[in-house]
Length: 291
Image 1 (tube, rainbow, N blue to C red):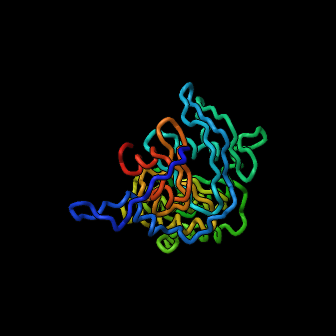
Image 2 (image 1 turned 45 degrees about the vertical axis):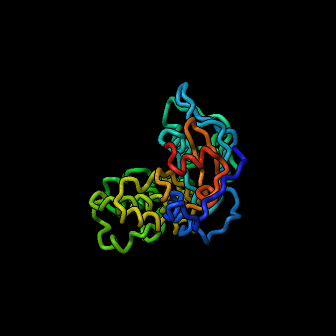
Image 3 (image 1 turned 120 degrees about the vertical axis):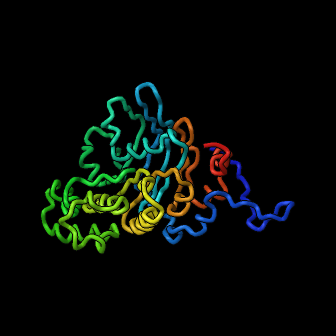
């Protein structure tokens, strides 16, 4: 990574025609960020070293080194096709489902390489849940959607209580507590996404992966999801891919910037990324010169 420091704009500076300098994209959101009170010295829970990913002959990620802290929100931003979603799917080995995908290098969860031969991907996904871009509730009742993972894992004790806790954790309980027998497909888009989050946390994972969870939602539902992510970081490590730089600035403690060619160009505290990035390429991306 480039080590030169780019000076951040003076918020009180004026141009020659006395108009205020436009704020850097995301800077106001950083200053009002939800996660500003969380500890910055959390231990590492996910770490990659020299990680390369290929789809056939095409390299999607190049030499990714990153250490993601526990109980914080880490945002991954960058233009389309830069590999951020590919990295997310490496963490719980969802890329195993793609025949042409090959992963080289190391990726550790709690100090264990998830690509070791003795790691069961299904068991891994019990510890690392995932929420996808489009809400994908099962064609089942609201209750059965949340209870599904518990029943699959044989956790049949106190299911009612765990379903209630998960729905409360997803900020959905008050809206559906009298409708648990109704189909999850009858909920609004934002409610469906929170139902999927409830389903993910019902089995008590340690990490929650989110691949653009609010991109298909309206502004009100998006705000609810962002508030929820902030709450979830009190109990879980949250890693979110987003195309929305303002969203990354609002909700995350750390930000990773992936750029064209599958490179992780910079990873640091969110405030530093948006206000004083070290890399000129990151500066150019954040200020809209490309991407």
